[in-house]
Amino acid sequence: MTILEEPVVRTAPLPPETPWFTIEHTVTAGDTSAVGPVYYARLIDWQGQCRERAGMAGAPLFSSDISGDYAMLTQSCSCEYFKELYYGDLVAIRLTVRWVRLHLMKAEFRYHRIDVPGQPDGDLVARGEQMWASASLVDGHYEPCPWPREMADCAAQFGADLSRAQIQDPPNYRERRTQR
Image (cartoon, rainbow, N blue to C red; front, side, top):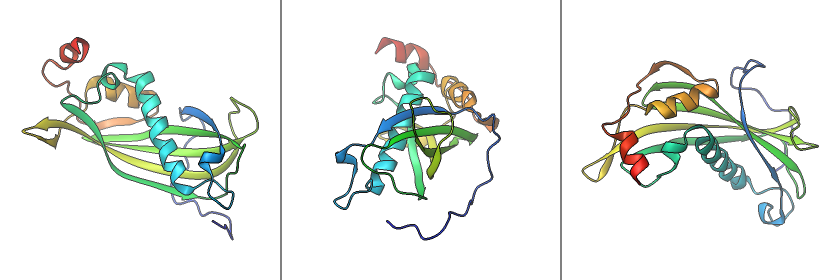
């Protein structure tokens, strides 16, 4: 991919105090395409890794059983690429949750090339979004449902506006989760 001009910012900037969940990744040969830069689909994969680790850290009860009657389904996923990443680059993948509305949750990801582990800023190389839906298994298919309290609390830790969220633990949610 060749970038010919500076990226146009299409989303409102986040306040500097926005809380982020961050994972770091060193680019390996397996992340790169035949011509050298990171294969674009790897950034989408890193979104998933960041999301899962944030869930394990902030909602361990929910994350302990991903094959139960309740699920957080990915409704949409996107990524804007601004600059190339190459073998050996250290990348910080940062996640924040913008809002929770009804049974939907919107997350934003930012990818920064960093020089040292733990660096709080860096060179913005890409930005992505995901929309997640809260769903429960009913008669063999998933239907929208309110977010369990643990998931809403996790989203709030990362800056989410919960003012329009549907939040309610399903019947026996905690008991079923801890028995598995």
